[in-house]
Every structure is written in C-alpha cells, then in structure tokens.
Length: 70
View 1: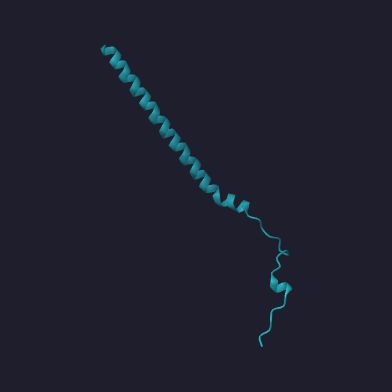
View 2: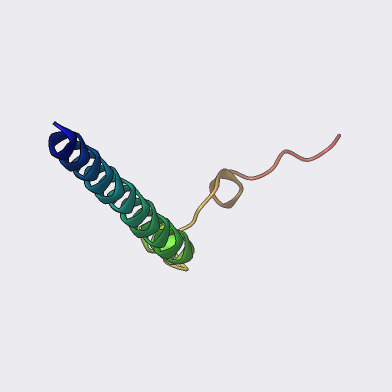
C-alpha cells in the first residue's frame, strides 16, 4: 500500500514537472516569435504599400481652371 502511494506521488510529481516545463517552453517560444514578428513589422507593412509612379497623380486643379475672385 505504501509503495503504491509513493509511486502515485512520484508519477504525479513527474507529470506536473513535465507540464510546467512544457508551459515554460511554449511561453518562451511564443515570446521569441512575437519579438521577431514585431521587429519585422515595419518592413512588412512597408512592403504592403504601393508607391504611385511620379507622373500618374492628377487632381482636379490640373484639369479644371480655378475660378477667379471677382
């Protein structure tokens, strides 16, 4: 009876330690992933923007003359 209780205690202790190590490892991995993603964020956002070509912009002032003040 005492050996079964000791085995159960050791088994629960080992499983708890494995669970704690898995959580610590997962949090560290996620933290590295977030830091790496945050460092690459400005470059990633800039790659999503589309730069207009220099001669393609044409607003209404270039097409219609501005009214003269009377």
